[in-house]
Image 1 (cartoon, rainbow, N blue to C red):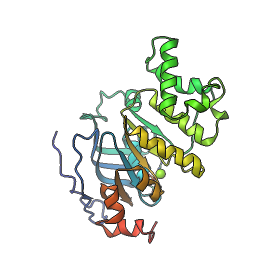
Image 2: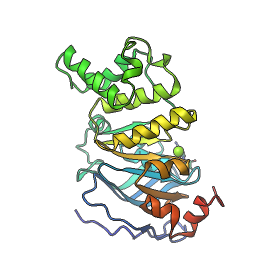
Image 3: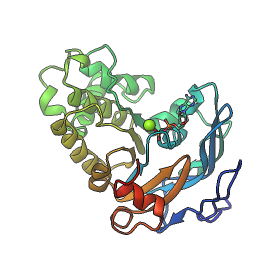
Image 4: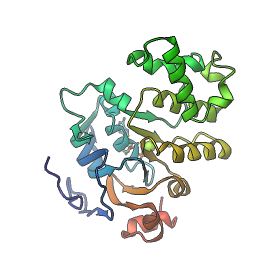
Length: 278
Ligand SMILES: Nc1ncnc2c1ncn2[C@@H]1O[C@H](COP(=O)(O)OP(=O)(O)O)[C@@H](O)[C@H]1O
Ligand SMILES: [Mg+2]
């Protein structure tokens, strides 16, 4: 596939030209986005964004409210398909395959690229059933023993097993907010994803529950690629290896997290991280 260079952002629709500075190159990315535009009717919410997601690392997406972070994130597993006014163009690949290809099975894609939202959203069912739901739909367990194993492993990986092992038949909604969010992460893990997307996963949680999720994200990157949207810059600095700064639909700058926070190349990024803006 032709790979346009990453520093190619051109002005469109009368917006000022904005050259994205990419200061890293990703070897063998698990996902690539090239020239992605998203429109909600007339509203141009994501403007010509090109960005890679690396394997076994965390990409943080930061920027002021309304800059298109969630919209871009939702392109990566075609959640925008569910919004009637949304139109996506550009090319997004997972393991080299175009995820917007006509032949792509969208349910399969969303198993491979899972998503965790801001508000924990357990189903009104037992803890066990919440985790077993995806594997059941996708036929991942041959029998009850297999399913028990899968539920156990997923809860372990989500750092929740010890807290729930004696109460698997209780409702998911009986858990605390932080536990519910880890249950949602377990549910995502249970269908064996390659990429986990997280949209402000701790913004509804208290600091202790948030810290647990941050520790978990750090562990999860051993097995998954992670892209996280956060409005919390300290969180981005703590959990990610790469950071992308968005501003009014443009990807302004992306690079190693330590460089973005200590030596941003773009004034817009600097203004945001120093708190002058946003
Ligand atoms: N479903 C929608 N319909 C119309 N406009 C939307 C919709 N979702 C988001 N937008 C608009 O798109 C822009 C980007 O929104 P969003 O991706 O949610 O930003 P962020 O996550 O960075 O806060 C905003 O101007 C927002 O109002
Ligand atoms: Mg958002």
